[in-house]
Length: 285
View 1 (cartoon, rainbow, N blue to C red):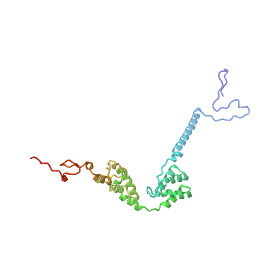
View 2: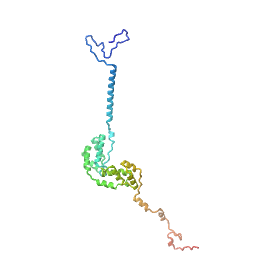
View 3: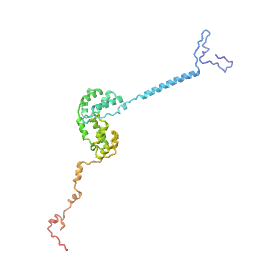
View 4: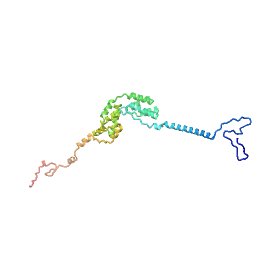
């Protein structure tokens, strides 16, 4: 305990952890209390601050690593249409695409059912309008779709389309490559990229482009498309246009039929020199 000074300007002070003399009585036993230095207090405050900051950073990182998908983003995903007669997609592949979107955007089963039914076309849409009321979730609709359209056998149609498809039927060589790739995959899903590219090259016309690709064969579809973009297709005239141009009468002959016929002897219209009755003039030699 600090001693009192007679001067009124200096007030008594106490050490950290000491007990106030006002609380001490003559009969009470004074217990030793823990004392802390200023360095220990500052170290304790620093440790608490670091722990709090670390906890805040960990919570922020965990919150940012978990993606949150809003309702607006959920409605922006794309589903391709399905028409069993167009054969743009197999029903199992189409249903698998819907499942991927459901998992990626965390879409409820009822909402997925509604969006999937809206993309059905042709006979599939007619089926949905008639029988989809019995299915309340996408899982039920998927099972019914595969059961209804999964057994339709159109392998022969796919083979025929592939055999008849050449670069002459496409607007560009790049379009031929991408469309032909899809057709060949339907016929032989297990085929490797090199086999598909060789098959595509056989359907490219004219021959000099095909020969160039056979000498330097690309290794992938993007490489093939990049090479084909350097070639420009010539516009092929239809048979009707070429026939009309070939058998079209000259404009001179059309105009000559409108002019009156005159005789070379008498210069009178209505007959020619062979039928002229006038006498030929005598020539002085």
